Image (cartoon, rainbow, N blue to C red; front, side):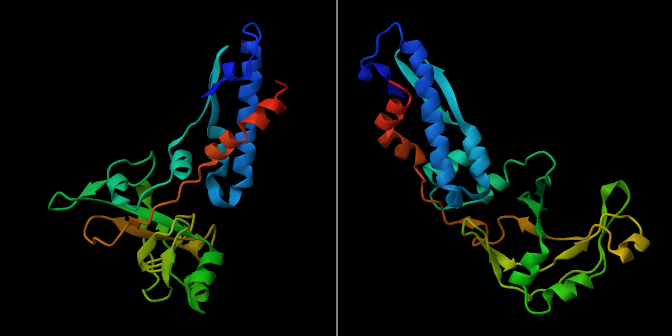
Length: 235
């Protein structure tokens, strides 16, 4: 929150100038986020969209950051168990949360594997062997008809951008998906993609452990430069 009285504005003009200040702050924040694009990665667009002018008045303006993921990056995260939220909420269209015989929750998450990833993460013949996998096709009622799978031991353990290390190797159990429902189409290799599935459960204590994130604190950077920002707004 920025108190406009600190800048000695005439009360009659504060409301109009407040809007200019708010726009200038939001623009400066977005520019700061753009400069930090490498740290924000794929979240950059959502982060910039989340910068919102919440309120303007003759005395103050409020500019906030909206969105769960942008705020996680902005404020940082302590090391935590990802299962605490992966096994509680599911976004629309994702795999459902199931229960085993003991009533413990679990679910499956699909990870697409690009050709460049297979070549980078796998051994020398991983991609050529991936192409020879028997296709997994879409059957009736949307169910998959599984073909062959990539055996274990063909790749290193996967570590994502957040530093989360997979328990299984990156290509273990990978299948070749084709966007057709006939064996003739599968032979043509139409719309071929590759994917693996990983089980989220509490069976292995070491699994799904997030190392945490250091806070970006981009808002603090904007606040430190608030005088220059206000001046640029013509106040």
